[in-house]
Amino acid sequence: METLVAPFDVRLDDFTVLIPDVLVARRSDLTDANLPTAPVVAVEVLSPSTRRLDPTLKKARLEAAESEHYWVLDPQSERFIGWRLVDEEYVEVADARGDDLVAIEEPFPVRFSPAQLLR
Image (cartoon, helix red, strand yellow):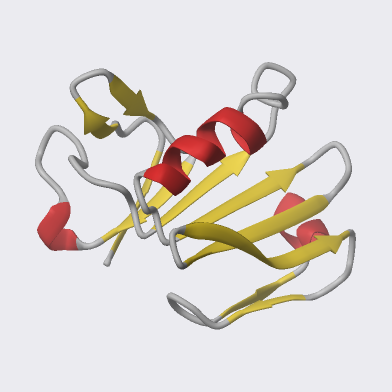
C-alpha cells in the first residue's frame, strides 16, 4: 500500500475526478499521473469550503465506486467518523470526539484520538 497526500487525483471515470486530502491505495493501482480506481482509504479533513460536500456528495461517490474505507476529520468539532464498505454500502465503524479513542483494525490497525490528530 502507498499513502499519498493531496493533491493527487482519483480518476473514477472520464467525468469524475476527486482529490482526497489523504489516500491509501494499492501500489499496483497507481499510475504516475493518478489513481484510476477507488482508493482503499480516502480521508477528508473538513474545511469551511468542503464541510457540506465531503460527508455527503464525495462520500456517496466513493461509496458507489466501492472505496473500502472513507474517513472524515472535522477540526471544528474535533470529531472523526469512519465508514467501511459492507455489502456495497458504507457502515459507520468509528465516531469519536476530542480525546475519545478511535480503534480501527482494517485495512490496517490504527489507534488515535481526534484531538491527537489535530495537535
